[in-house]
Each structure stands twice: as C-alpha cells, then as structure tokens.
Image (tube, rainbow, N blue to C red; front, side, top):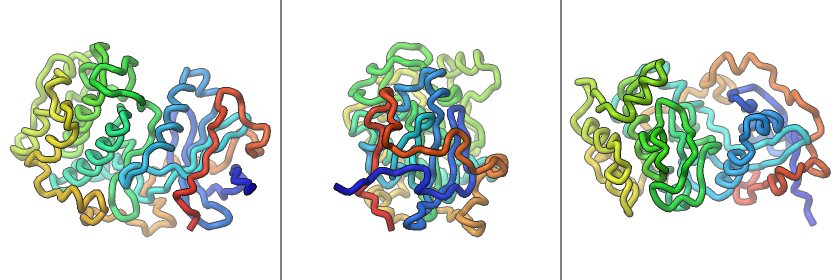
Length: 338
C-alpha cells in the first residue's frame, strides 16, 4: 500500500502571508513538485483554550466536502503533537481586503463581478446545507486570473436546512445579520445579508452601519434602515434594500430557490452565470504578480515575520494524532501534483 502521509518536511516554508488569532498562514513550496501552496498552521493549545475545537473540525469537514471554482481547495491536512496544518490552493492575488483598502472603493462592474463569484460559492454551500456565516473582504482571495474565492470555514455550520437551525452567536460584528444578534435562531439567509454587507462595502469603502461603538452598531443592525450614498446606482440600492430586510423570511434569497432571485436581479444583468461558473467571463481586474509568487499582494507586516514552524519540527502522522483530531489527515487525490 502506498504511504500518502504528508508532513511539514515535505514543504519549503517561504513567507508568512497571513495571521489570525489561532495561528498563521505561510506560502510554501511542495518539495517534490515545486507547487506553490498556502499552509495554515493552527496551534492546538490556542484552539482548545478558546473552545474552537468544534469549529476546526467543521472547517476540515467542509473543505473536504466542497468542490467549486470559487471556493479555495484543500490539498492536504495533517497534524503534529502541537499543531494542525491545512495546505490549501494558493491565491497569489491576495485578499480582497488588500485591494479594497488600496482602491478605497470599487466601481460597480468590479464589485458586481466579485459579488457574483460569491453568489455562486454560497449557492454551492447552501446546496450542501452548509451556512458560511463569515463573508467579508478578509475571507475572499483573488486567484492569479482575477477570480474571487471564499476561504476560512471556521465559522461555518453544517446540516442547516432552514432559517432557524443554527443558534450560536458568531461572525464578524459589522457583517452580523439581525437574527444572529436577536439570538432567535438563524440559517442560510444570514449569508445573503452578509452578501449585501460585502457589496455595500465594495461600493462605498465601509461596511453598512459602521461605527466603532459596538452597542450602537448592533442597535443599528437590529432597528435602523441603511442610508445609501447618492452615487450608488438604482439597481445597487434596490438589491441592497432587498438583502438588508431585517426579517430573514422576507429577505431576498431566503426562499426555496435560494440564490435564483438574487441572480435574476438587474444588478447582475451583466453576468452570464453559466459562463462565470465555467470561468469563461473575463475578470475586470488582473492582479499584479510581478513580485516573486505575487507576494506584493500581501501585507508587509506579515511578510516581516519569520517563515518558520515555531512549535516542534516533527509532524509525521505516525503517533502524532491526538484523540481530539482523529481522522484529521487528508490528501486530495482529485487535485493532482502538477
């Protein structure tokens, strides 16, 4: 039998390209193929201390289940005694957040294109009864061709078939749907609220209801109507009003046809959905990959960090699997080493 086990020794660590509360993300090279990949390292002690074990298991499960052009693919998963490792498809265009913060806001064709990629990704997740729950510019990556892909499934919830099946209070404050704040149970409709928040931020430069005062923010999301800048098109305003309906049962996208009413809205009239799904629509923006492997599209604060595996070297699978993470290891045979 062929041994498919993978470890940190199978990769050359090149640069830190991201950092979160539980670990960091590195650009790595697979030694035997030269393939560039993104390695997400998570410290088990941090995960346990913050009660994130279930979220991490869900992320691993979701990444194995999904297969979509606008969702980042999992290539390998393995663990050491102290860490978990996700090895993912590398998107050298960096985060959507990186480009939005530099442009301040996008013109409508560019925002529409990225939003359309997200509609198709969310539609796929919902078809698997997965609610994403964390749509925001920091969790959207741009690939080498300029297409947008969802990453980071730590807050996703599986087995959600309606609009009340999930209970936990989670997400990023500015993008939280009212039903999450009201703790009344939530479901797939939260992702369409977040799509509205994403579109609003891409077009204006700030999330809706933005304020640093958390209590005021939550009160606005629950009770206030959104104010639209005058420069937004009528189609954009109309779509956003329908996505920002407080009652999830009345929100666009909440019905049995999920994304279809959103896809047929005039805001998306420039999108050929079949062509986009086949990646046959030309993206409005091509990322600059002039720097080595596109590292110019990642924040300098990350790249200054040492590209090392800081806790323990040996991550061979043999004897490394703690009971909490039994079955974590993974090799994606459908994503060949090329």
